[in-house]
Length: 324
Image 1 (cartoon, rainbow, N blue to C red):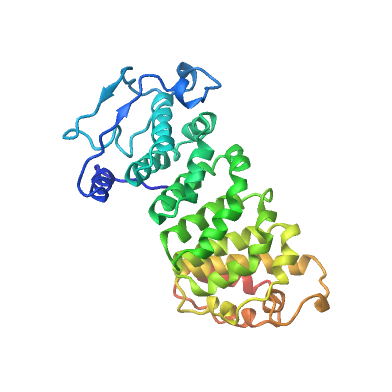
Image 2: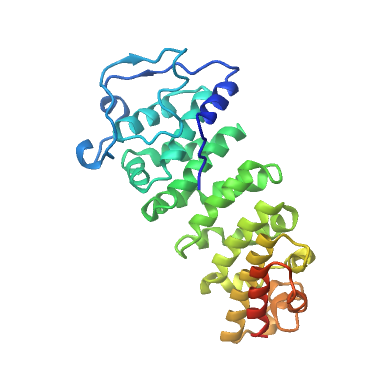
């Protein structure tokens, strides 16, 4: 996951976003005193084995480099601290975007996921989602998504889940903010620990599922599958009134990736319905519960997929049909 520009393309794109002007940055001589951040371990212990940069104040000539670092460069502790300082102190949208891209790419690596947290970087990055500029918001979410792959980071980032959900619903349909925001929530709901924070958003997930494009559908189906595996979320999920278009996810013309994720969601729910006795009277017609029973419309549609052209879909369907 994460934005991985190749051959300096991202740096060129970033310079283009600034009207063709390169970003001239001064790197402060001493970061520790200004930022107030302290490392919990020494640079020699925590910093990856990469070439060290010289200390002292230095100006990057505009004709040489648009940013102090390549956007896809793997940075050590000192340089990550400098990028966080630039992000925190600058009001320039261009600088904010390039800094966030740099942090996002570094957050692909587990060592830097931990380092950024220890440098106090999580709230600095997460607070950027409060910006109205959708490009800045998107890049902040990209970094948060990569950082959320670290379980300890999730404990710090869970306070932003509802804000991200609000931004998803307020953003343009199929926008980058929606897609990356949903990826972040997918990571945050892999375990049961923070799913309850989104319990009041289940209806919105189904609404967006019916309206969104392929990328939106795939991420929402993953989130709903995570909910379905949690007994504390399952009943709320089953009781949700879902759009009538939900069953259309099981048509043969649906893109295979969407269909496989839709079948995964159905299988988890169906297995739970077989394992536990539910009172039909607790659920209203039009709820997910009624769509997923053996007499529901989804079962009929899934049976019709037994000869699907995609082998992975076909295998999954046969496995499911044998349970009916």
